[in-house]
Length: 198
Image 1 (cartoon, rainbow, N blue to C red):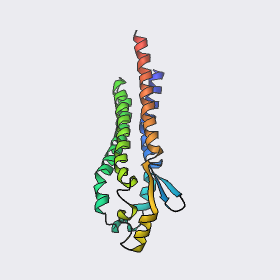
Image 2: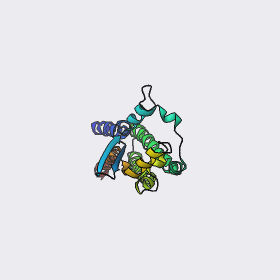
Image 3: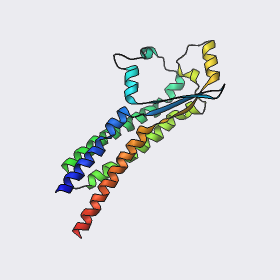
Image 4: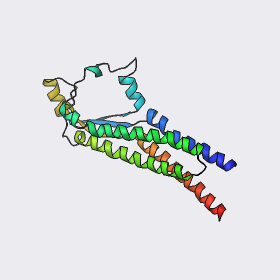
């Protein structure tokens, strides 16, 4: 009986851990480089950071409402929206796995949900990589982001600044690690139960 309680507690903690990981851990790594001097400037941004910058009362970026999306940026939106859908799926699977772990006596549903969570994280990586590709290979330049108005400054920035890295950061690996840990944890208990029955 005690080992069942231990299993459920650990399973729920691992399943729900994806929520704080997704919100507070660095989700996206952005590194820009300058063609002059080979200088790199990078930032790891979490979803909470994005909320504080754009959506909170004390938002540091208030011009987001006035932003006019360019056609180049718009063409990458399907991949970004797909990434967002995968992230939402990961969070929903975390909640569903926690509920199933508490309510179900059998461990197979928990095992299946943890495997699906791991696949969803892999889908997040792939879709975000597809979103980032045109920014990294130079198809879309900094000038085409629509952040600067037409003119001399935009031309200079376009010539000097280049995006070097745009990828899912540590949050993605931590979410995958949580799903993998839950899968292994559940598998271990299932093997113990099979051994006891024999």
